[in-house]
Image 1 (tube, protein in one colour):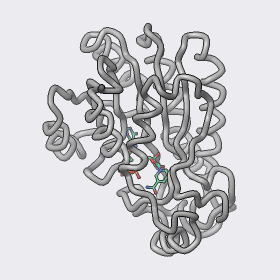
Image 2 (cartoon, helix red, strand yellow):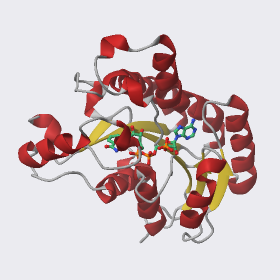
Image 3 (cartoon, protein in one colour):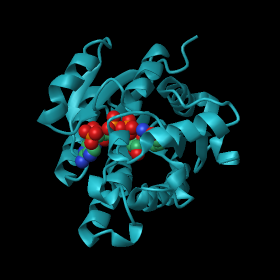
Length: 254
Ligand code: 0WD
């Protein structure tokens, strides 16, 4: 039995084959979901195309989440392509490298705004424009990190943006529940991806997890992928407004 047979899902945030969104896509495809991928711009287009071509019937559409018209166009294209939409995977974040080291107190006004726009508001913008396509109910998920709840070294403005993202998940869940649309986040342990390259001392963060996490190992993208698949499926039908940890249990001890 395929858990996602007949489900149409848009996956946002594949930058390369290490992206968490790519592992999520693999899990979703393995359960029979029909996928549309969005990519930020021409810079990543060819790299993403090579990946997307390995998934039968998958389609690619451009969408920079800071541009409202891009999201509106995406809504139109998804309606044409799918008719009804059942799932949204939001796996997007950005902050300037110089704001991801040193003291949080030095965060600039525009750096703060940029990080919040791309990493938190974009979920609201995407949900706003796409939920009308979820006429048969749906599941929306995003990616967060423990730095939303704790002051963690170097995570800085991204931690504050993730706190806004997690609060947005709760408000969106409360708004959209009446349409049988669920909204959740996965809080992943640290994983070496392009985005993680921006975080200073990332190696020592990984080492601490290996030493202290109950499972004594770091998180693999496939583990996040399988939890995302659960969240997109009917198995999670009673769960909304939740943050689910896929972090080898680190948050209970760290
Ligand atoms: O340790 C980690 N890697 C963790 C990541 C632990 C816990 C959570 N996360 C989160 C990230 O904060 C992010 O929300 O998971 C999500 C995915 O991150 P990732 O897979 O680690 O990173 P990456 O492969 O870089 O994907 C993020 C992508 C961007 O990549 P680059 O590196 O090119 O900025 O988000 C996309 C872009 O593809 N992105 C955008 N997409 C559309 N419009 C935009 C934008 N304006 N900006 C960034």
